[in-house]
Length: 221
Image 1: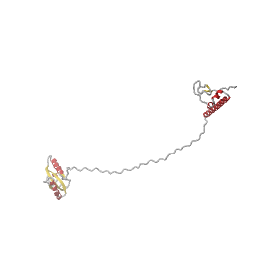
Image 2: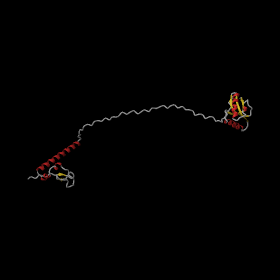
Image 3: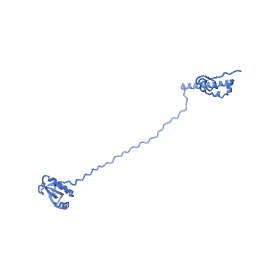
Image 4: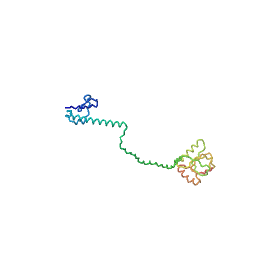
């Protein structure tokens, strides 16, 4: 009776010899990969060690050797720069949506502004006037004060009092500057009239204001 030689396999971790039915390496304890071809053989066939087992194991080794050679050849071809043809990828052309133009700002010319001058303040109510230069007219004499030191202030004070009582065009004149008046007096007057009639019509208003002794008088330069 001929006894077949048992074919051993190696541990992929440490290279130690291992039985085809062995699950773990006896040297390093590494779990051995399961050989599908050997695993499908009944254990009793493997244990018998007959010719069928020898042929089966030899065929499995041949298949494994062919797979290893193919893998090595494929790796070598890749290292040498062989390129595997692949289907070309479609070129995608980016599309850009048209951008709307930015709105143009409309400039509006500023409206012309009209500068209104500020209103002039009303003249003070107690402001005194001067007799118009070179004017020949009529007026109301409210008081006559002799010229002297300090009497000018007295005449001005009486003129302002007349203004506060509602009389208009009130002032103080020096009688010596006019031919129709006696010199030496400060005359407090009210109004500038063109004729005697207009002055007499205003006389009643002066008397109503408290100047009972007022009278009309012509002023001649």
